Image 1 (cartoon, rainbow, N blue to C red):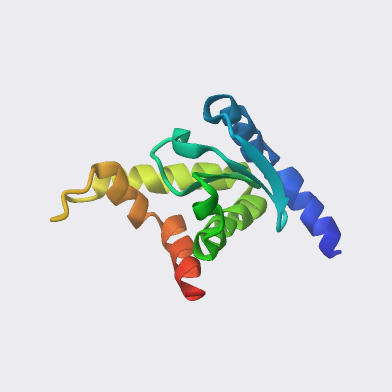
Image 2 (tube, rainbow, N blue to C red):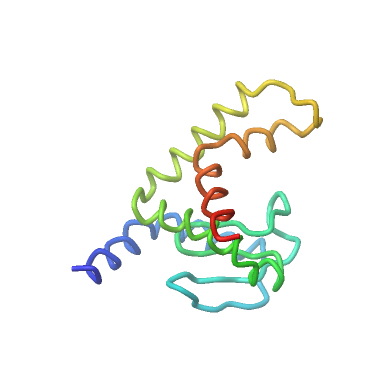
Length: 137
């Protein structure tokens, strides 16, 4: 039963993974590996927004070896993998909607962060992933 659920999760989230695979044309990753049920790639500084990592379905792009070996960041990204396997394309839509909501309705902050960064940190999906990231530290 567990194996069947995993296979369904991979199939359900494949459209998100396919988007990530298309991004390989832009990101030009230099190394690929399968780890803990995820396809991981090193993409360097070409990742949009220059984060430590970016997840698409069950594909995770890491900026470099340091980011890939950061256990907290790995836990964070695997929350997004799990969300994608549960929600499929609906997860992608929900993520975009929450981001856009906070982008439009986030007031200015004293830190002077750009609007997209404030929206990112207020997103429910990112808060959950950050909680998981910090739980292991």
